[in-house]
Amino acid sequence: MANKAIVATKVGMTQLWDDDNQVVPVTMLQVAPCRVVQVKTDERDGYTAVQVTFGERDARKLSKPEAGHFDSAGIEPGQRLVELRLDDVSEIEVGQELAADVLEAGERVDVTAVSKGKGFAGVMKRHNFAGQGASHGVHRAHRVPGAIGACATPSRVFKGTRMPGRMGAEKVTTLNLTVVEADAERELLLVRGSVPGPKGGVVVVRDAVKG
Image (cartoon, rainbow, N blue to C red; front, side, top):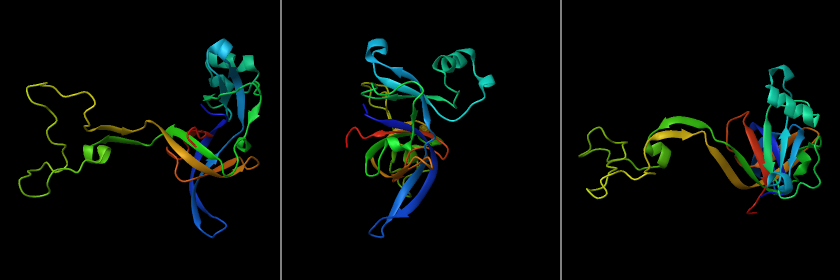
């Protein structure tokens, strides 16, 4: 698990120049102050985590359980609830705000988000298959996977066989990205490299577990 984490919204990609005048591609993340709604502990919940919300939401559009959850914590309703698994929550209290300055420039982080959905895709796009021959002996089957079955034994298709299907729109984590800048005043976090998901998507940034 992580020692610190934050929820952000993906704005898009841009570039900066470092001290050696080299271009650095960065992803810009907007970090609205995250309000702590609930702190989960080993004694009560069996694991340690922090439940946070961000942004604003009309209280009239909440269900009664949601409204009661925010009221019991004394927190203004946010756009959604996100749980951040942390090793130590002893210094975090309900109502506390977490901002971009949780992380520092130069720190290694892991970024988790739901990747862009690509719809139904064939095996060449989805699994990087080479495809069939382009000319002699292949009749209108250039992008198909070929035979998927076995012989009379086991006379079935194994589960997990790579085939065409829905691609993307799944939880993806990119490991060991570097924080280039963390600006709490402008609510911005700049991370070197690309981050999963579309613009406007919600991402979770935590300190790297393998860094």
